Image (tube, rainbow, N blue to C red; front, side, top):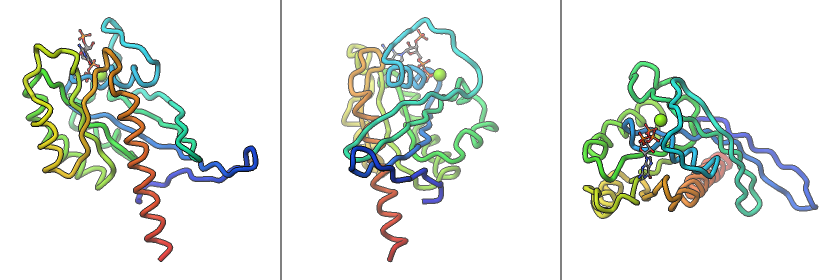
Length: 194
Ligand code: G3D
Ligand code: MG
């Protein structure tokens, strides 16, 4: 993989523990729920009244998967989805991406092509998950799960649906992304060893 992963082996309780630091970024239209998903995952809270900050901010979250300890550094655009010229800096060095749309907003779904193109141009083939968010708003949903799944399948990207409000599926999605990144890095190392 082109980005350098922190990958060291430390002795703990006799067994070997692998440690990684991943940079995760979230893209998608404004109001799709990027900040809310990150807040739900990192702080385990949902607050519709928080003050939005301008500028990139990032938060850390530790995750253990079998013999692997992962520190997820999750970057929030802080509204930079609006500024095409600054986003390449945000993409730099990313190991995995959440591409978020709002299942109650067709425009945010229609813009997935634009986000995928931009990611291909800036990040290459890093692991990605498309997320349909706000599934708690069942009466307002305009994009059925099947349409999201079909789009993701056609673009060879994983698909999940979440509610940052209720927390449904948020932890599972982050774990899935971490596993995709580890599996890609394992394949990369295996190919290099040949
Ligand atoms: P963004 O970071 O992608 O721009 P935000 O989006 O996280 O700021 O969310 C935009 C609005 O959608 C916020 O409402 C937030 O509370 C709401 N929202 C985010 N995720 C969900 C969800 O899963 N369910 C519901 N019902 N609402 C959600 P406000 O009113 O603060 O603008
Ligand atoms: Mg935001």
